[in-house]
Image 1 (cartoon, rainbow, N blue to C red):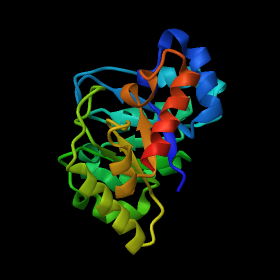
Image 2 (cartoon, rainbow, N blue to C red):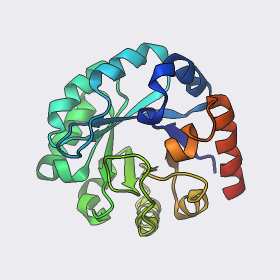
Image 3 (cartoon, rainbow, N blue to C red):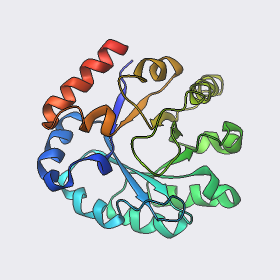
Image 4 (spheres, rainbow, N blue to C red):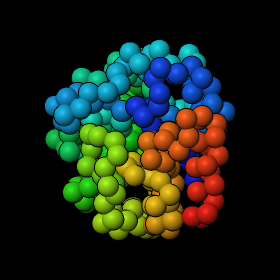
Length: 223
């Protein structure tokens, strides 16, 4: 199986964004963009303006992860800026999940949902069939570089089994500590899209081309 690779742009060297984006354009399957509001999580990272700025410079799918308390405030501006996937956290849309999903779909975008480590798959069972992608957080959200939570492997396996049993088409994506130490376990559990950040890609070498080759070698060894 070919695993899709989605570099997390909050981990890239933003002082060298043109060169790094040129490397990623040739190699990545999609680009992961974190939007944080400083409330749902303490951190603040990228923005709809960032999406708008890079959209003309990449043809890759832009996968936008909404770590925000009120995702409906962000959906329209993110769609206008050029996002392809719009992925709120399940906990933030529980009261009106079907309306939010329909809002994203009506804008012509793909619908994702993100599960925090403590959020069970049961939380989204009634709208699994409406999703294009499910992101399993394998660390608590908000900051890069946190330790992997091994209990999440069972959640990944559960999503893989439900996908097969119900003949569904959502992608199973992993966010958090995707690196040499976890690739084998993640792949074995059913991961399909790996979000790579500091430990998985950007810190492997100052030169991003070299870092990418090192990452691929680590993935091959794990497969």
